[in-house]
Image (tube, rainbow, N blue to C red; front, side, top):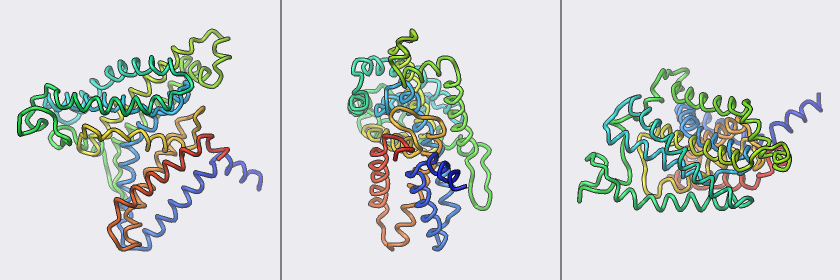
Length: 348
């Protein structure tokens, strides 16, 4: 019995055990106060669904041997462009949402291919180079947002009549279409059924892909490149496929994120969006060499739930408005901790 318990704890991992215990402690403190615990859980479910695809986007690059995709803003920018085109066409509801997705996917394929060509030339330094690629693309696109030929008056600056605004609302487009689809309330907790189903569909697609011949070959390339070469596999081909798949997930993930958030944020807003996703996959038990869908699911649930519940509980206990300070401490503290766990859950 003792050995079985030890095996379970080893499989679950010490980091996740600590974070789960801390999350349980936060929820117990919330129950002891007059905080709206069902409301906190509702917000947590929304954050899990809206950030889930970003965390899933880490799986293909890790399995392909590229490592953590710090260049996720490359895909996010593609998703932003998809949202902007859908808004320019004045599409609403599910038509607007799927139009944004349809536009974001081919852009993600093209951008992912170009990004992969760069990474294939810097083997061994992909994560560092990817970080600067993400920073560069976000900064470079700031010029495009000012010069983009959009004409929708709700998107451009009122003064001058050109250049996109910093924050664009989706209230008249496709805000909340997934969140509200088949949603219901149980014990005061609102379940965003459509949003969670879309995340589940994304997770299933990644799981299914790595059950195919191509997915297995990609996994072999990532785990043992020498054996892959001896088996006749083209390393750059499968690395490129992994990067493209990750970029597509990032692009679609932003469309999901935006419809849930209700706004599209331009300019420097996407700069740091890769880091919570990186923290999520590592907290879930992945390493820089191996990642599974279950790691992404566990990671996004733990990270986003703790991030959602810790701030209001901290404010309540301390009796002061330090929500922004608490957010910075909790989010960056967890990211720092996660990045020190790059050897994976079993060795952490």
